[in-house]
Every structure is written in C-alpha cells, then in structure tokens.
Amino acid sequence: MKAWFAIDLWKRVLLGLVIGSAIGLGLRYGIGADAASDVVTTWFKPVGDAFINLIRMLVVPLIFTTLVSGVLAMGDPKRLGSLGGRALAMYMGTTVIAVCFGLLMGTIVQPGAGFDLTGVSTTDLDEARQRLAANPAPGSVLEQIIRTLLSIIPVNPIDAMAKGDVLAIIFFAIMIGVATLMAKDAGEPVAKVFNSAAEVMMKLTIIIMEVAPIGVLALMAWVLGTRGLVVLEVLGKMTFAHYAACTLHMLITYGLIVKGILRLPLLPFIRGVADPQAVAFSTSSSNATLPVTITAATKNLGIRKPVASSVLPLGATINMDGTALYQGLIALFAAQALGIQMTVDMYFTIILMSALVSIGTAGIPSVSLFLAATTLSVIGVSPENTVLIIAILFPFDRILDMMRTVTNVTGDLAVATAVAKWEGELDEEVFRARDPI
Image 1 (cartoon, rainbow, N blue to C red):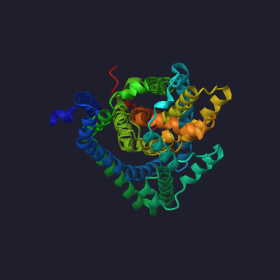
Image 2 (image 1 turned 120 degrees about the horizontal axis):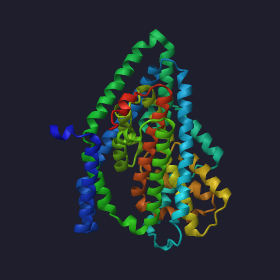
Image 3 (image 1 turned 135 degrees about the vertical axis):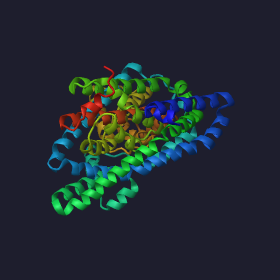
Image 4 (image 1 turned 60 degrees about the vertical axis):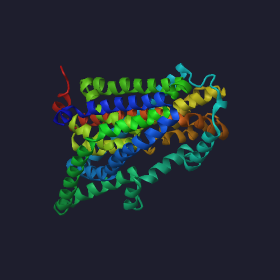
C-alpha cells in the first residue's frame, strides 16, 4: 500500500482512467453491448456515483469556508476589486477566444455537411423535447444579463446552499468575509472559525481524493461500457472537431497565458493540472471537480489561498470555455446539416450568444447541450429542427462533455495562476518544483 500511495495522485488517476476504459471497451466488444451495459450499470456505475457524491458533498462547504477565509487573508476588502476585475476580464477574454476556436474547427472539418438527419430515434426526440422544456431558452441578450445578475443575490442563503447555487454562495461568502474584516477585533472569533473550517475542508478533500483512482476507473468503465466507440462511427467529424478545438484552445490560449504573458515554464503547469483534468474528464462536472482544482492550485501550482479560494469557485461558475466553444460548434453543425448559409454577422452573433449562454451554466453533465436552443435560434434554426439537432447529439454528448469539462477546469487554473502572479500571491518555488530543468 505504501508503494501505491507513494505514486503521484495524477498518475494513479490516469492509471484508473486507462484500466476503466479497457474494462468498459473489453466488456462491450467482448460480451456484447446489452450484456456489457447491464454489467457496468450494475457493478461499476454505483461505485462511480458514490465517488461523485463524495466530491459533490464537499463543494458547498468548501466554496463557502475557503472563500470567506480567502477574503479574510486579503486583509483589505479593496483588494477584491483588482483581483475580481482581473479574473473576470480574463475569463471573458478566454471565453470569446474559445468560441472562435470552435467556429474555426467547425469551418475546417464541416461536421454537419451531408449529415443524415433522419436517423434519430423517437425516444431521443422525446427526451430532447422533455429536457428542452425543463431548460427553456434564456431569451434575449438583455434578459440573459439581467437574469444572471439577479441570480447572484440569494434571497435565502441557506436555500442557495441546499440547492448548490454557486453564484449566490460566492456572493454571500464574499459579503461575510468583508463584514468580518470590517468588524475588526469583534470579528476575530468568526475569522478563526472560518479559517479553521477551511483547513478542515481542505484535509477532507485530500482524504477523499485518495479514492479518486477507483472512482475514475468505475466511471470510465460505465461510460465506455454503455456507449462504446459508437460516437466515433456516428459523429466522428463532430467528435474530432470538438476535441481538436478544445486541445488547440488549451495549448495555444492557456499556453500563451502561462508561457508568453506570465513568463513561467509551461511543463510544471501541465503537470500541475493533471489531477483535476483527469477527474474532470471522468465526472464531466466542473463543480464536482472544484475541490480537486483548489487542492491542485495550492499544492501543485503554488497559488495562495486568497486567489485560489476566490478565483477558482468563480471560474467554476462563469468560466465555461469548453461550453462556449461547443455552442459555436453546434451552431455550425446545425447550419451545415440544414443548409443554412452563414454570414459574417451571424458569426459575430454566435460568438456573443455563446459567451453569454455559457456564463453561469450549471457545472453538471450535458446541461450545456440543452442551452444550445438559444444559440441555434439566432441563426434561424426552427424550434422543430432545434429538437432534431439536440436529439442527434444527446446520446453521444457525455463523451463530448468530458472534453468540455477538461477545458473549463484548465482555464480556471490558467486564469488563477495569472491573477496570483499579478497579485503577488504565487509561490514560484512551488510552481517550478515540477520543472525538470
């Protein structure tokens, strides 16, 4: 056991991912799709669900306690202005660039060109209609902005925590932290409670992450055992375009931030984000990955608490580069499949709407697919055809969502690294400790 725990966590998680994939594919193509689906659903999915529940259990208390503690660590509420402003500006900037990468790969690969729209099943159509009814289109740009702003202020903070409303939790935690600082001596007992609670939650995160390799193994066995590689057969060009666009965005955009702007070595960053990337890939949930993201930021990248505990929860809520990229790609897929001629104005509209729709998107699997109704509406796709496009993508969306979540989490850490560097909150010795040179 000592030898196992001596291995870096990201290597153990990666091993679990590979073994789980091999088990899932081996069962599916060894004993048949139906039998494999029964096996992995019965024996592997409950283990994966238990792991997801464990890390979701951490999300609300971790965000609340670490964010309050992070504000307290700043010592001056005025620092929130520069820190938050820089984070928001970078999040918005990288989101717009992400949509452009999605449109670029969609234009090059042409995933929807000549696609047969008649193969969608009645079951998938019904599922798409039901999910769209539960996820109505956000409406106009102004309505989307107003709705997002209003959702930030919780009417009932306890209810917001129970529902996992991350934006509202962030707002309430910041206000508690600022009020505690303003109370000065009278606020010291409260500050000690939150600082202590934050440390306890971080230790609990480390404990739970030791079961991550098993959880990732189970999740990958279930996903590939039930889905197999059929996604490559049915939507091969869409899958390639999506994975290529996400990969280019991570390498070029985030690489430019770390290496070009911050003048930091890129390899330590790549190694440092491997843990949350592996968990993000298997869970398809930015929120579920957040505890791992915060741990990786502090332990691997040297990002100190004031930045890690404020910028990362914010990023898990509003920084959805992978989601925005996918919105643009879906729009081009639909336009190509339906024969809609794209204009320059339509491209700019897609960029704007994709960025807005992605803000505040719930960090749970596949939700961004059903928000595509807004993006599709601005290029003239009818409601009936919107249901058709979403029904085609829905059975395969989990495999696409896995890469979207990896992109989202990597972007959170790249922006947090930049903000920490500019705010003097980056321990470069810790960051460079993984640099072999």
